[in-house]
Length: 475
Image (cartoon, rainbow, N blue to C red; front, side):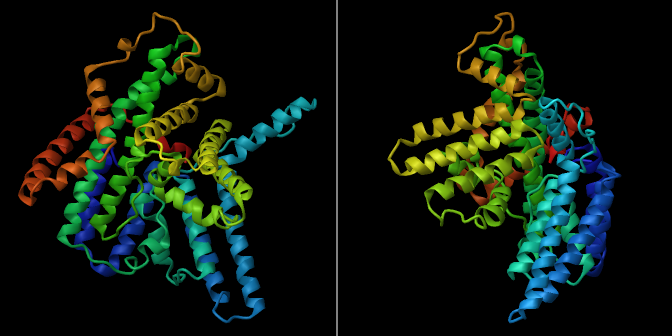
C-alpha cells in the first residue's frame, strides 16, 4: 500500500486519523505501532517479520550499549559497549546484505569463477527484497551509533522504540528519520490546529506532485527506456531523459512531502528531504539539496568517521569516492548504481580540486553544467545495462545517429507537454515566491481552492486506475 493509492487515501488514512483523535494520549503509540505494522503487512506480508526482528534487535543492542557506555565507566565496560555496538552493526548490515545484495554477490562470484573455468561455482541466491529495508536498517544503525556516542539516550521502552522504528509515514520511502529528530515527541505529543492545517497542505501538495506530475512523466520515461537501443534517436533519448529527470524528483520529493505532512498531523516534525535540487549550481550543492537525510546520514556515519576532509586532499578525495560508491549501492544492487555513485563522486572531487565554486564562474554556466551532469547521471541510474546507458548518452550528445522513423511526437501529448512545462517551473521555488507575495487572506483563498482542486484532480486520476509505479522497491 502506497500513499497515493485509493486504499490509503480513502480508507486507511481517514480511519487512522479518526482513531488517533479519539484514543487517549497513552494509547497513541500503541495505535501507531499496530497501524504501522498493518500498513507494512499490506505491502509486504512476509517482510513484516524482518521489520519486527529489526525493532527487537536494535532495541536490545541499544539497551545493552547504554548499560555499559556510561560517563566515567571502566575500560572493561566501555569495551563491552563497543562489542555490543559492533554486534549491532553486524546484525543490521547482515540483514541488509543478505536480502539486498546476496543475489548480486553470488552472481558476480560466478562471473569471476567462469573466467577461471569454473562456471556456476556457487548457487545464485534470489530472495525477495523487504519493502523499505534500506531505510529502516540505516535508521537502526544511526540509533546504535548515536547511543554509543552519547548524543542520545537509549529508550527503555520497547513500545516507544517500536513506534519510532515502524512509524508508517516514513517507513518505506523516507525521509530517514533519526531517533534524535523526534525523541522529544515520542513519549507524548500534542497536535494543534496549525500543525494539522500545515500537515494537510503538505500532504495534498505531495499527493498532487506524485499523481499529476510524476506519474505522467513515468509513462513516457518507462516507454522510452524500454525501447531497444536500435530504436532510440536524438529526440526520443532526450525526451526519455528529461521525463525521468522530472519523474524521480517529483516522485521522491512527493513521498517526502506526504510523509512530512502525515507526521505533522500526528504531532511529529520530520526533517526536510529536498530543497529544489535542480536549482543547484554545483554537484556539491546538488547533494546539499537532494535526499538531504541520506546525504546527512552518509556524512555523519561514513564520511566523518573515515576522516572527512581533515586528513589531507588525497585522503579527502578517497573518502568522497568511498561514500559515493556506497551511495550508489544503497540505491540498488547493480554495477550501474555503483557507476552512478562514482559519476557523482568524480565530479565532487573535480569541483573540490579546482575550487569551482570560488572561481567566479557565472551562475548560469555553473547551473547548466550541474544540470547536465545530473541528467546524464539519471540516464545511467535508470538504464538496466551499461550498453543501453552509453548508447542513449551518445545519442543525446549527437555522437551517434538513430532511426528517423521514431519521432518525439509519438510519445508527446498535450498532457505530457503541460506536465513538462509545469515540472520545469515547479523545480524552482515558484510556489514559495508566490506565497511570500500574497496576503494572509489571499493565501487562504488560494490554499482552499487551489489545494482542493489539486486533491480532486489527483483523486479522480487515482480512482480511474491510472498508471502509478512505485520507485522504491529496490530500496
